[in-house]
Length: 334
Image (cartoon, rainbow, N blue to C red; front, side):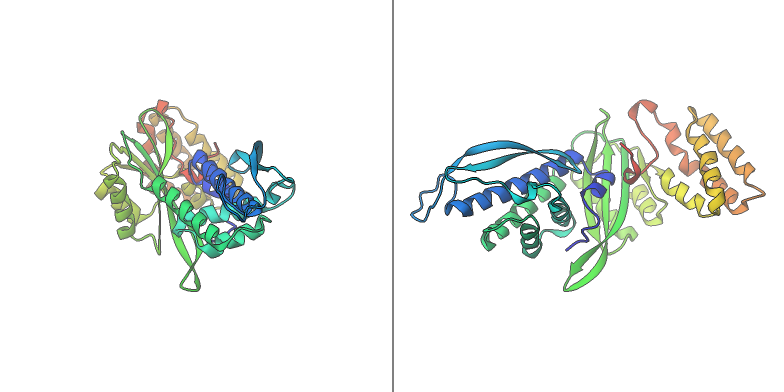
């Protein structure tokens, strides 16, 4: 099972379409309620069964606040007695467990063990093993359909980022790379267009990932934004033949490594003046001014800035109206 500490909010921060995550939460929670109500009735909805002990009586609407936003649920009503799912009770930590299972679905498919643990964490009783298996299949099918859907239209801007999460494989906990690709189309709409896991971030892995996107229809990519990963840079040039842009937040993190604690705020503020420039000419001039400022006090930082100028400021050559930023989707604030 994947590490539950990388929860739903973090997937959203990595650029995942929040609407899709919210829909996954809604689907899983709704299916669990339906299964629990089915068990309490002794039969499925509208099913003729001599073992039936209760009947359904419609639904009542209930909003559930989650880190993916407000999820609209339809809580089943029973003809005899009442039903209220335990996971909706105040202060219950069910959302974290549900988020971990949804992450697992994205990373490498859901296991019956993890869904069984989820049922317990959500305080739900009477959900059978067969129902758990059915929910696993349904979650995997929905995630698979989303991650393999055709990509239509032109997507000029592509953000790619990776993180490592813990996953259980063959009885051992291993670290796997999770790659997320987010693109912006010509209408300015941003979507997650791909996600993949692998044992490392080698060039062959990146190449196959990008080729899988092109096979699904990705076209028109003009700018690829990512960390300064040589394997990814090579793969992007080979497969997409697009301009490469170094993520400025990753760059900032690398730059601050050359400063001590007392200098970091000053360094960060100085470099930020570059990104406030409106034109490419002004940005490049300000970049060199800042680099010269650090030439004596932080020579390694100045040297780094000299080498990184054009790869960090590539985005300045593109239209402002697209909303294109040089920040990887992991770091977008909204």
